[in-house]
Length: 179
Image (cartoon, rainbow, N blue to C red):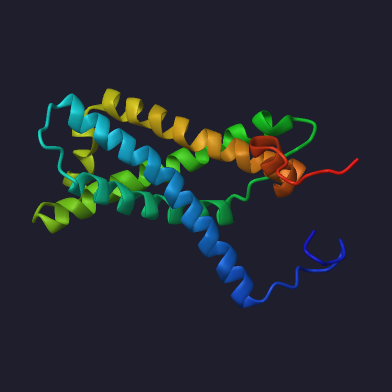
């Protein structure tokens, strides 16, 4: 555990908490960044862009960092809780929808800010998100949910089993055992 009794509050220092939050934000940014860069690459390749502009990857990584921060804020507001009776999937399905709504809301907000930067009205720019096509927004929502869902499952597994056991399940036990 973290060196505390079950009835006492954790004794993490501010520096330890800040480091833990930074590591979580970095890991989530790398996770989202991998997905967003892959989607950007697919989009550029589908449009037969040649050469593929590297700026789309920088934007994808920037967006990943923002999404990671918003995801962490959503986790503060709606902490991930796993109920052993419901299992990981049953416990986290509602949270996955909430986190999807956070990411979707971020995208609408981003569209509004992007419009402001280009001299357009904020609300009108928000309405243009997804090319004002509800079907496109639903399709993007499904993709975003498919990105968030594995992260939540892994987090739930880590909560249920502990980080060392989860890492061992995923990557094996690298320590040599002597018999």
